Image (cartoon, rainbow over all chains, first blue to last red; front, side, top):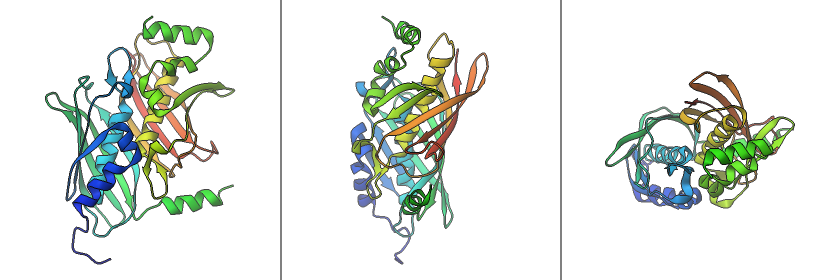
Length: 155
Length: 143
């Protein structure tokens, strides 16, 4: 495929990201996708609480939002449509989120090579400020099928 | 009964399964806890709702991150005496192989326990524990 840069179709990335089963299960929503930037939000829900004493959402919920927004940031930076996979994700929990208030996540793909994309993200509340920061890398043109064959050939 | 009382009771009974019962997000993920010869382990039951890549299909990276973080926190609760529930400071997650939507396990070790901070390493796998699909290390605030 030799389309103009970027190759992405914002609506397609929005629809695809919003339709992922785990994103739907969390009740997370895609806010917007623009070239190199993905934004999501999630409403507080009782069954996502990690600490029953305080009503704080589990960190894994915030990790998921950031991972997903980061993937959207990569998709929207691609020159051609391809599979991507997270290589690693580092998350710092800056402060506990305010219970029962929406959480927003915003990720930016700030560097892309032929094989790797580098992304930073932040999760925040309004009002309230930043609650988490992330750095992640993605492999492009991945990976799943290769991994599947790795698995098939492993003892 | 407070959550701390519940933890004390589960530990006294040697039954970690009771810990997960009181955490709503563990129920949402389908996460349970067990003990075997190597110690505490977590299991997330295979479920289509946990998929993040429908093409493969593969588990969402957030599911593996959640499982690894849960495994680390439950390990600290189970193995060490802390005045409060440990709080995650940070986690660094490596995605090693794509995970299929089948039963997924995780287990960790407390690499270092200080007075205020513990460092924990965790791995997640599916059929074969020697072939992990994700690994993480993180820092947790104990006091």
